[in-house]
Image (cartoon, rainbow, N blue to C red; front, side, top):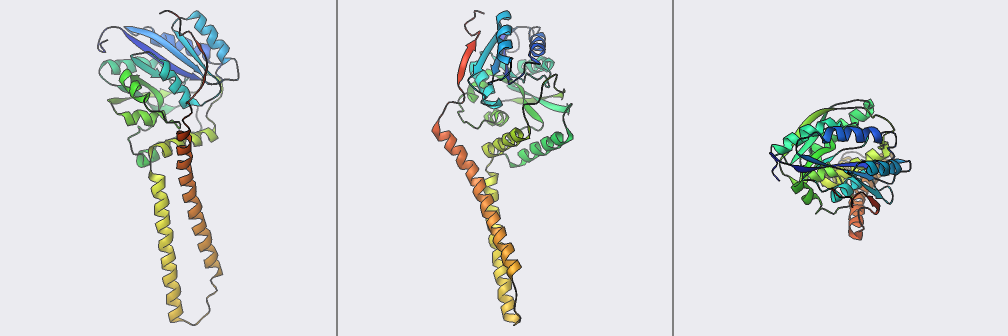
Length: 319
């Protein structure tokens, strides 16, 4: 297979969780974007991440009418990042596109991804110029989070880039050797290296349905990114410890100075209470940070599988 010319297998991995309202439109736009690409043998891998609605039923119907479709049904909801991993594990493409089912990331950009890949790029990732249909709070927090990750991460994670991207087979093979449980795919992809380029695009509002990332999940996802790709929080706990110790030394010197220079009785109860509360807070914060890392170590040493597949549909169909 030559990237610059000739035929190749293009796989599109689509994680789905309660997406019954949008699936028909999603599939129509994916096929309309993927099939006209010159030389592309299209494969679409839908991963049902334990949906509670009719998502799996609709995916069965789609697979029955389109031989390019493969469906992986997980036994329960394992989470977006692990659903992506399940799709990557089963995708057979020379190039694989990751895209969500909600159509906020336009499938039409896949054509540009493939053009960059044919030109020699190993990872073509989408960068959001505009984000329609999202609250000001989400926009501000997303902006702040990406900038913070750029400062604390041990690797260069692109600003304003989600999971919407194209990966070369060599990149996928490298990712599949990484078994960690708390997965942050965009950080993992940055870690493996290779030649990566940004493709700017405008992100649309959801076509239908509701967001699958409420505030609680957003916070958890953000923490996974920080604790999986940075040791800065541990260093912060160390810095807090030194800072608290420095304040304690200053307090001792100040008390000694007052003892030498005045005979007045110093009440000191308020100062003592503040000092105890401050030191207790520093200790609890430090323990909490250490606990986050220990919890991740605990999850890794159990060596459970990332996900459990209940059913696979369409994988035995001849191409």
